[in-house]
Image (tube, rainbow, N blue to C red; front, side):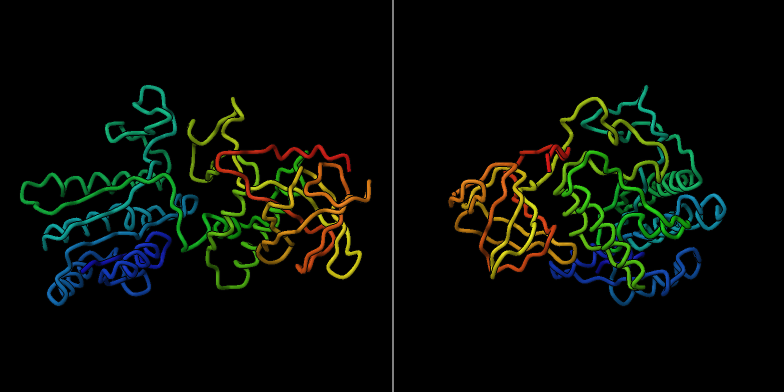
Length: 358
């Protein structure tokens, strides 16, 4: 039986889904059910659970993650990120259970000189931590305390400290809720010389996230990030939110780091007849390709057309070139300025610079 603490966060949520999918039994505990900073009660609780269910693994997904607020709530931050993991490690050792807890790469200061760090490995276990913020210092203290349990000659449990640089999960969208709660009331999107596809996609996905937050029942949707990957972009990162960045987070010297999964091929101008629409072609497209309609609201819709009617030469064609006005026939309902895209072959990428003459 597995015992999960912090079960309703990003990491805990994914552990529950994983265990459900493989039929692994577990007990999920979150902060509303148990205060893991109360060491004596925590020990009594786990030992009672152990007697009834024979716990073989304890997974600590609980943590204090509000980096900025930690500077004014240092005591609570240390209790959750240092003392609680240490207590859990000791209790796991006492009952002979495996223990897993999570730390952060912010135990490092972001400087890579004189480290074993390189682009392929990142920091290694042998690099010496230099935490800067209260959050980072508390996490490092937790590592040291848990390590003391590991090094205890009487310990026979397997104990793991996992350093992560970034968590992707379904519990929440990374930091968007925290950004709102700091009082930020405007998000700037860098869109100069970007295509209408780039700007519309970014605005749409952030609007979906913000609407979800203000609905009062906030839950991360992985489709938001998947859609942001359809546009030309560098590797996404948390920027400076959690502190200094490293070379791994930034690449200003080459454009080779750009990637995208879709290409914009047209935008809808108007409906000209029943099931017939006039479209503006922005990239060469063939009738044999599967097209996707992207609208301001809702998911993309796949469709195909038999051919394109070129309004310039008034001929039906199997493909059309950029800077062409064409008419297509489809039973998919379209509106002015809806966008049409195609999926790119694996590894292919385009620029999202808007060089259209229209």
